[in-house]
Structure formats: structure tokens, C-alpha cells
Amino acid sequence: LANVRTAVVLDRDCSWGCGGALGSDLKAALYGLDNPPSVVNLIGGLGGSDVTPDQIKNILEKALTAPKGSPSTLEFIDL
Image (cartoon, rainbow, N blue to C red; front, side):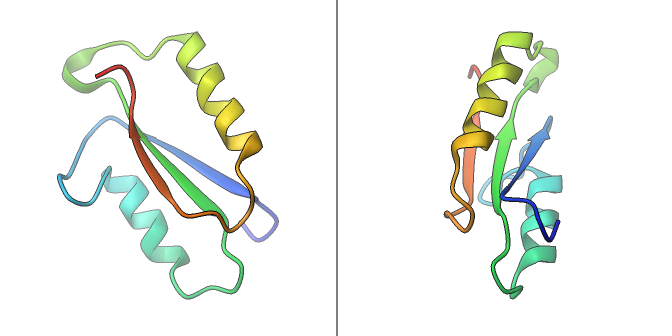
């Protein structure tokens, strides 16, 4: 991930207070690195709901516009 500006993680689970499991693990792995990518942790598909192509498109647009080094974010999709 050295040359990545933003890492997007789409989790289908939620650990309250921490975000998604994979998103939390990724943020922990990047902790302390010089100039790490920002992490956009999205949680969707809870309860078996679908994540639509339009939602995926919006996710990618957010990732492409996030500046490197911006604070990590946690968002819920269609809740």
C-alpha cells in the first residue's frame, strides 16, 4: 500500500466502537507508518441487505477524491 492514496474497506459486519473488523485490522497494520494511506471503512450489507452498483460507484468516487493522509472515516451504507 506504499503508493496508495486511499484504501477502501467494505465490511459486512460491525464491531461497535471500532468499525468493521477488516477496517480495524487495516488501520492497526498501518499505524505508525510514515505517510500511510487514508482508510475509508464502509459497513454495508448488514442483515443480508444488498450493496447496489450505484452504492459501489459512490464508494469509489469518495476514494478517488480523498487526499492522502486524510483522517480515516467510518460510514454506514444505506442504514
